[in-house]
Amino acid sequence: MGLIAVLPGLPGIAAGLLLAGLFQSGVMIARSLGLRERLPEHAHAGAYSVMYAAGGIGYGLTAALSAVVLSAASPAVAVVGGAAVALVTTAVCALAERGRDPGRGQEREQERETDRCAEARAGKPSPKCAE
Image 1 (cartoon, rainbow, N blue to C red):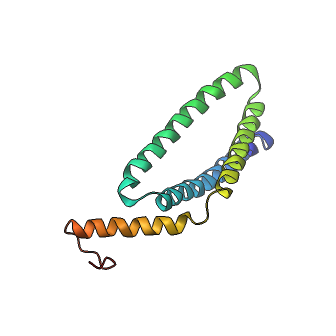
Image 2 (cartoon, rainbow, N blue to C red; image 1 turned 120 degrees about the vertical axis):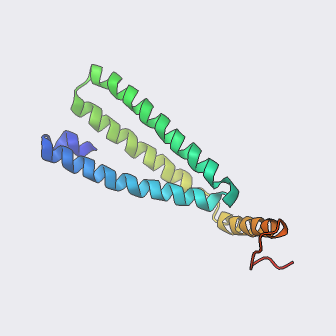
């Protein structure tokens, strides 16, 4: 989105919005896959709902903050500031992910297997659960 401030006019705005949309779609897919990896299957629907609700709250807060910044600064400053906040947030999230326990993936697979066995006991056959 910082391109909008650097490249003024319609071409700059179009390029900034296209790139922002491209990157945001990748981020949304990564978040969904990360959530799916970390949670048991029965918690996916609720977790996705909470994730999208939190995104909506974030969009609302961003709109309010943008209005405050625009009342005190130029649009270019507001756009560059928003891009800077996005980059800092991305860096903090990347650092938090880096510190994640690498053995957690194996633990999740064991939990999924336990979930499958519980389903098999409830009358839903599972080929991987031998009882």
